[in-house]
Length: 393
Image 1 (cartoon, rainbow, N blue to C red):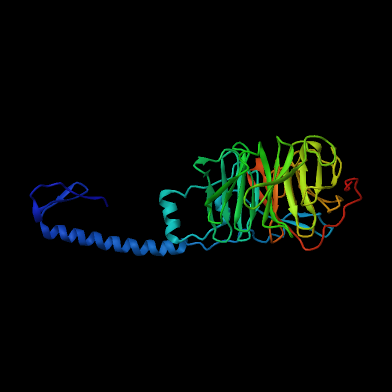
Image 2 (cartoon, one colour):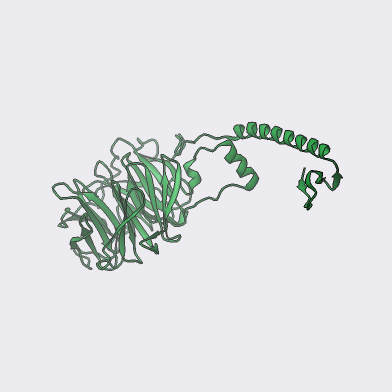
């Protein structure tokens, strides 16, 4: 029932009410109509309260158990890695919804969905926040798995992000590499900008890794630069400590490095993309060895992009042309291959950077599938598939 009060100057209590165009004169009649309307509104409120309560939805399980989820290696072998799920939009956080929120969605349409476009880098904090760089949207998505909330970092130091390439987390500190702005931006745990690192040093920073090195003071930040063909190391205050590497194909030389990982025991590993290999160094940049070669066989590389190391020292390498992730021992022996080209669970379309969290979950930025895929590394060590030429040399 649509009601409106006529505009009437000086009418006082003898004002008129209109109901579907029919005039009702008299104050008492008007009050009766208003009382009836209030009664109807109360009844409507009660009905909507029951409906809203029925539409309420508790928080869902983000990665529910699924016996049909892909595993690697496939049966009958003992599985070593299991697919858990994916993050593509904030709806994948499966937050709780009150009845009134559900009712508002039904009346006004669902809330805006925040989607990942082309994820490049990924990092997971100890408090279960997932940071995903997105060069297309020029932002860093922040998915809070505990609070079930979504946020985004859009600008820094008074200017928008340009090409956020990778992200690293070390305790409360967050580091974002921006290839176009030629710098690393540091944020605190609350998302507040702290400082700019490497503005006059870097040319095209891509992969970034942060780690506290034993017997060293504070955190070290390792950054690979695709134009400098080097790994630049900064101290906790953002000053350059040293660098290693130059353009070339020899030991310790690089040709467009794209990612770096740091492990307390193994040292530093660099995805040397256009040399089609992974190189290993000490924490101080001394060359230790390398594995991989250009080819299409097991343990070979076509375009190694992302790299990560799990708690047992196994090395995970995403290949953007093979559309898979290969798993190696710390010595460079091939153990396992995960995935192939496609859009389904455990399939990839231009996999990019990787991260492994404290729960031994492998996070993979699946760029052209517009998602981040998540895998559980099972407690047993990966079984060796076969002897491979991909050995540290």
